[in-house]
Length: 110
Image (tube, rainbow, N blue to C red; front, side, top):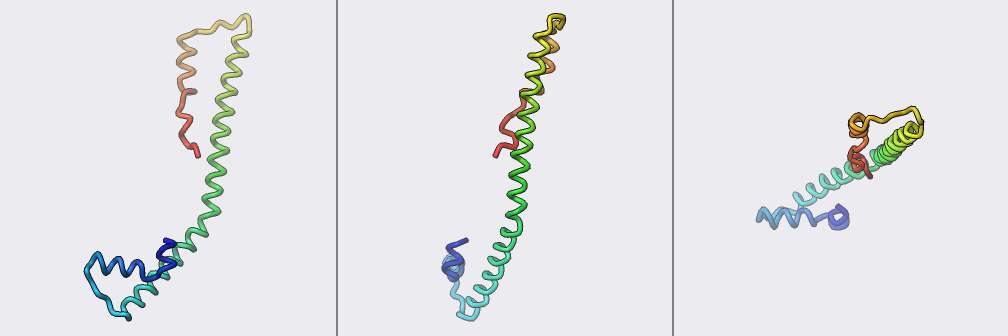
């Protein structure tokens, strides 16, 4: 994109090469003007969504942090329960209960 911005005729030259055309100067200027408008719209769009992209990234970080805290809290509670003398752990049920804790930690990773 920056190459096209620095050399406005780069796209037209490549298009001429691929299509084996020879455009008039007038037509080249019209295409350059249209491309300039499209590039400006693209830059404006990127500028407008940059705040949303940053917010999304922050929300993803917080969600991952909550997920990690939740996982660690569950493990601490289980360890505390095991330390109670009257608590008898059912190994089969414990395995069933732990299965959802082994989720893919890379989901939502940045």
